[in-house]
Image (cartoon, rainbow, N blue to C red; front, side, top):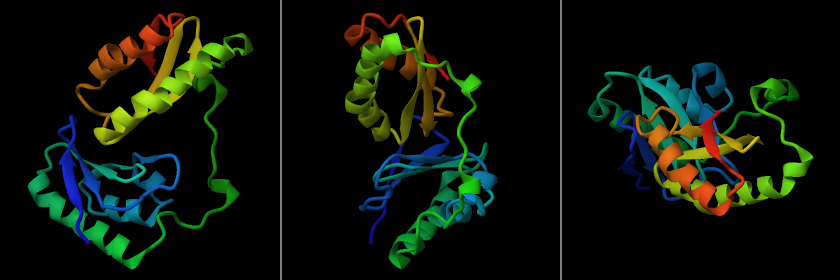
Length: 191
């Protein structure tokens, strides 16, 4: 087995491509050891001590290193852990209980209004068909978090969440695209 690596626009994050499916559907981000406990692989990566973020995409894993960590030292350790995981065919997630499921509080994101349903469907379609694939190329993802009074709220994840250029991506790339196709949108903001 060979694991390919790619740089991302975020210098602290590398994208690892194992040449096989990682997630069957969706994505999953881990930003600390407590969250990583849900995945033996994420927990193992955090146990290296220099990892501050892990993101599972459809066919890749993005790993974020702590400030001042040299990828030349960390990369071989990450590759070794990924090889061990995929060769052993270990489960990606630990068996859990309903107690580990959480839903964001309603006040975290604006509630969508029923009268905006057509606009929201257009926005979500653009996110799925055009934005998410482009952001995944850089080792991240974008999640819809709401639409209210012309403003779309999105959450950047994976390599994109801490990337110095994420605000430019959000404003210049994503906002321009959504505003072009959905004229009711006046702004895109990070959630």
